[in-house]
Image (cartoon, rainbow, N blue to C red):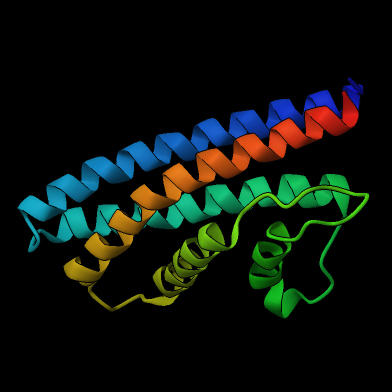
Length: 159
């Protein structure tokens, strides 16, 4: 296997582990919040973990974009375009990383991350956090499947 591809796969697997670790922490906070929905500290903690989860996914996307297709020119729509790019199968370059179903949940998580970063005085809604955290449990399973397909394809094409 090409050394560059082997290094890429190692970096991707390392980032995957960070993502899965965050998913586990979100599952813990979800359980806590379901028991104490009025606990602001738990709401804030879960919101922070959801924010960090999207950031970890985006870091994975950046690794792939830098390796294969370089950069995105439109800075005002960078986050949206980067996410959309990950569901593209780019013929002769790379397979899609994520499915349409994975994209939908990640896009919702991306929107939450944007809200979280800019909602300085708003209290987080426990029911919305619980709903998003439950979707993240589905996202975890979808991502594992998508990721394995992506890596397997890279190995087959660059064996």
